[in-house]
Structures are given as C-alpha cells and as structure tokens.
Length: 115
Image (cartoon, rainbow, N blue to C red; front, top):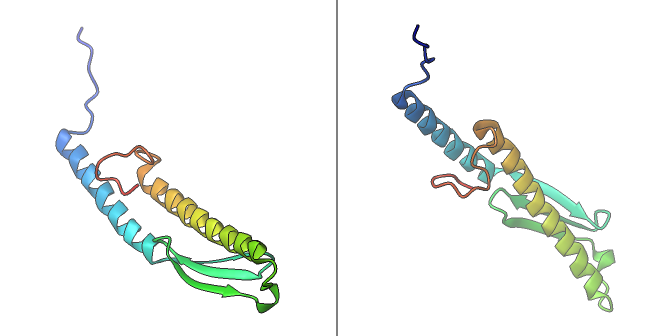
C-alpha cells in the first residue's frame, strides 16, 4: 500500500500568491505614507503632525513654555514629541503590514520587502 502524499499548491500558485502579497504591501505602504498623526507632549505644550514617511509637517509650541533661561526643557519636550511620533508611525506600519504578511519577513531584511 502506497502512502498518498497530500498535494499542496503548485509553484505557480505560490508565485501568484507571493506577487499578490507584494502588490498589497506596496499599496499599503503608499497609503501608510499618506497618513498623518497628531502628537503632543508636555501636557500639550508641544504638538506636532507627522506623516507616514516620518516627516514632521507641523510643529506648535505654546508660548508660555518658552523660557529663555530654560531652553533645555523645551528641547526635551520637543524631542519627546518627535520620538513619540516616530514610534507611532512605526507601530501602525508594522501592525498594518503584519495583517498582510502574517508577520512574515518583518524586520528580516528580505529582498523586495518594504521594511
């Protein structure tokens, strides 16, 4: 009695599936780059907008926190806002891409992958 080996998807089917995943990822990447996020720090004293390309598109600083004798605190609040913005963009991108890839290839430097 011969054991039957279950027949899986053909190589052609797998290639089509990989191509579709790559197209879906490229479309999602373009959409993610267009998104804009509102971030604030220092209790709202500093707010900014950052897009999916990690570019700051707007920065607002409440005048009452501008103290010429304490520039370091202002710098720290701005840095916190920028870092929060970058972190948010990365988390959303990773989550959205993970929905397509199922976590496959994320952060692994696979050729053709956007991350």
